[in-house]
Length: 183
Image (tube, rainbow, N blue to C red; front, top):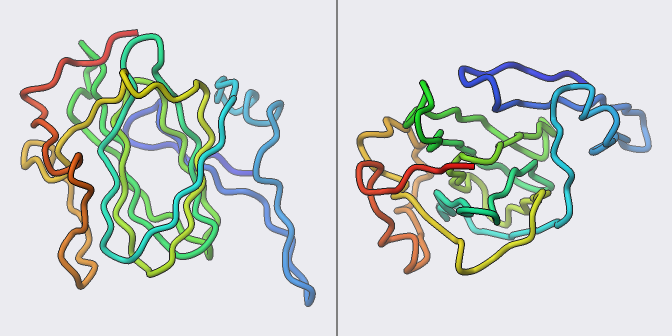
């Protein structure tokens, strides 16, 4: 596997080795020892999956306090534009983001550490998205950030349809209104 650096050093893009032939392909999607050697020290304890239509925006979300989560995400079918925003108190990259195209075709993975708001916009219908989390979900610790806050400067791709958000995601605060994340 190859680990690609990003503008925010703790955020990583993982490109797995893919072995393809006439039958299809094989790739290792997770190996704790190899990820640890690559600097990803999360001990994943929960897997999640979502299915979404083109234009759906999920996020930007994080878990506060002792329920904070690091995530290793990938697309099993379809494609998304995936974003991690640094919300760590005192971080020199606070409010900055890293974005990456994740698709079933490129098989890339995105590591989002604790202290980052995470979200994505779905680029293809019937997209299947997988999350590995290093902490269990806690509804009371759920937080959000408005995905289209101009202060974030995220260049969300045009999906050809208006953004489709959950009622909860339409009411998230701006970056200037959140309590920064602290470990």
